[in-house]
Length: 86
Image 1 (tube, rainbow, N blue to C red):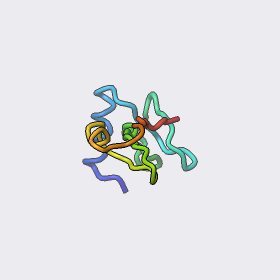
Image 2: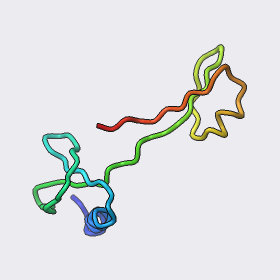
Image 3: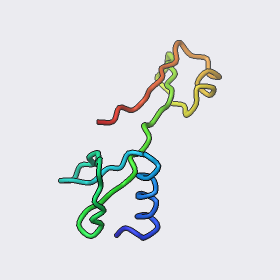
């Protein structure tokens, strides 16, 4: 069940130009012109892609939330990872 506050937040995000998604057959799909059928449909603000850094060590890999954290660790290399959303 979606609360009134959640519905307002999604609709306000749409007014601000953020991407809205609708759940169709179990998958979240971009919704260009939502009709706001809250009784039968689910909507959400498209989540921001996850971003993190991985350091490579002789003993394995370590994930870091920030580049600064990754650079503070002695490692062979730092890999920047950004989630791809379809």
